[in-house]
Amino acid sequence: MGGKQAKPVSTELTDKQIALLKANTKFTEKEIREWHAGFIRDCPSGKLDKKKFVEVYKQFYPQGKPENFCKYAFDTFDSNNDGAISFEEFLIAISATSQGNLDDRLAVAFDMYDISDDGVIDQAELTKLIIAMYDLVGETNRKGDHDPKKRAADIIAQLDVTGDKKLTKAEFVSGCKSDPIIRRLLAPNA
Image 1 (tube, rainbow, N blue to C red):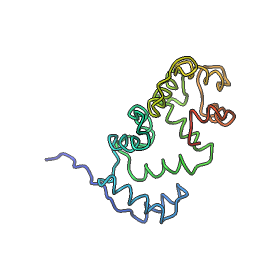
Image 2 (cartoon, one colour):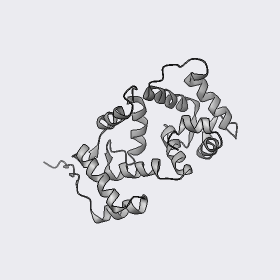
Image 3 (tube, rainbow, N blue to C red):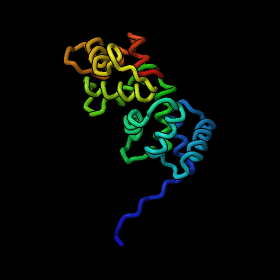
Image 4 (cartoon, one colour):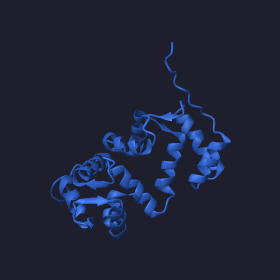
């Protein structure tokens, strides 16, 4: 008695949700309903948890180990930090990573790499993400130029305009836009 019950998640789309998603994405109502049907088919509870999120990534990267990468991506997409991704969070993330202009997509990548959420990416954060990306795609050569720590240091040295050994969002976006090799590595979908 007296304990709060968790409010059940509705698996039906409301007109208000559709309007909100249309305003925040480039999806049509028909596309939103199609995405929603697939989301509910895969996540009948209306929430995508970390375990299911990893399962989805394993389908796309069968040769890799997506757990490490998924930890960072999941935390980025779980915008309200409730431990699950709602349909709205899911669709806005899909939209930002696939429909947005290059600056928008690079900004999403920056937000994922800024693990400490302090507005900058340092070498330790970038190293962790490079290791996670190597794991994701099954890359085992991590010597020489492929060493994650060396690669992170090289990228920061190249993109760091202010010389503080950290990347701001502006430095990250600008650097990725000007260097196609770095962009392919750090933001393959951008």
